Length: 214
Image (tube, rainbow, N blue to C red; front, side, top):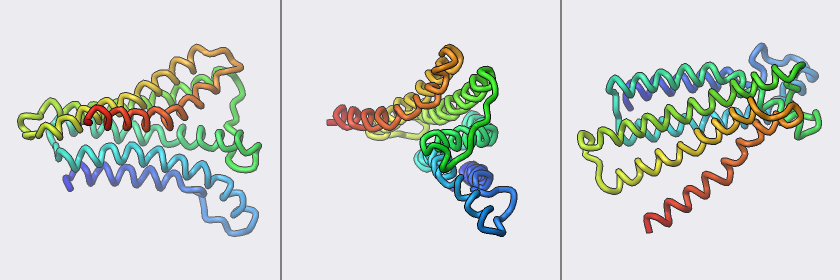
């Protein structure tokens, strides 16, 4: 493990800590416990999203082990982005579960105006797209240094595949951003549902890459 990877792991671990179901205090009675457990689904999906980006950096670090100035700068940008985005992520995840469960789990987002809804989903989209872009740029950096890293043909294909794969969440995040800014009031929440398209796009990309490799 490089020092950079260790530091990134610590930053992601801090994010996970901030996502715990009862961050203020440990429940000391049944009512508080049940109220805390309403946030479990939001906690799970938030950790899953954080884990996706953590794994992207982990794979990049294990494959290339770069600690040059550019890679360090992009990784620091990744840290800043994930720390800024943890609260929008938790709010959006909790609101999604509240809507899907008809109020049984999660918490209402508590938006009072259309402007607040647009701002929340815009902020989330910017953060999501930025995280994907930063992982993409790290892999692009490895590709740029392919001669110094002595990447084999297989490794070059893997690196290019990783770049194209991370372009998917980047494009989805940018699409969500456009929708958040442009959709009419009645449909602005579609800028949040658009992220579920990745459940189809990522497996489709994986199949295409397998077909291309023969």
